[in-house]
Length: 364
Image (cartoon, helix red, strand yellow):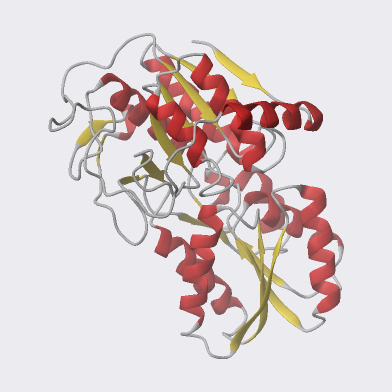
């Protein structure tokens, strides 16, 4: 089993993005979601084949939001484990900034390498669609994980969702409400402004806030999943809103950066929750900076995506509603029907809430 990690400097990435853009084929726009009508490479009028064994020697490109985010690294390692079990190879390729421009050269690299599948965590729901459509036309199966794309039927793709999108958004509001007596000014510290998953969760947060009329969302700021940027916007947020009572950060980089700052600035009385890694948040839970937060195991998300990619590339599974495939030690999974703006998808499972009572049980 080989794991290759391809990083790009900002200058090299800019040059690569320009070359990739020149090579793109003009394709249909990305204005609607997939309808889940089956494999995009199946002959017209026929469903893709299912059953049988997964092919050996598959090459799957994992394209994370960036190669330096600890969450993304864990997810990619999960994909590595899956393909190793299946006798295949993972190539991890992306840039060091959370932008679609940093990911496009990696899609082009997958096309040149004649990869069997691409698994991508989208930094933008639409900007990646033309290059991914080009990959699909080359016979590469397209999957998104963690953060979805919005490309309609061009290309058709399977979304590997970490947990029910609505549950993630509403539960974070509920966690904060319990801690601040359901009242006061709150803010959201998000990742990239174009990140599909972040925006979907925030949409449900806003809906859930209607149940708490005394809680007021004053603003949403964006740290681009970069610690330095997250710290700067956090400081600006605290300065602009001196009566701020709570912050929700639905990103592992954002919540860990905020927790680190709050732990060393005890005079700042702000309640923090969101989505974090137990390994990064353990100290802040134990010293009382953060009472609780939530997440799922990103390595399992990558593992599930790896098995799904292999099954689609081998023709042992389809994107049809109700289609099933085996995901190694995680068991069997079923493809869900398109709903609420999401095309065919598979859900890993519900998020876990971490606090002092259980955080030592989790090592990721």
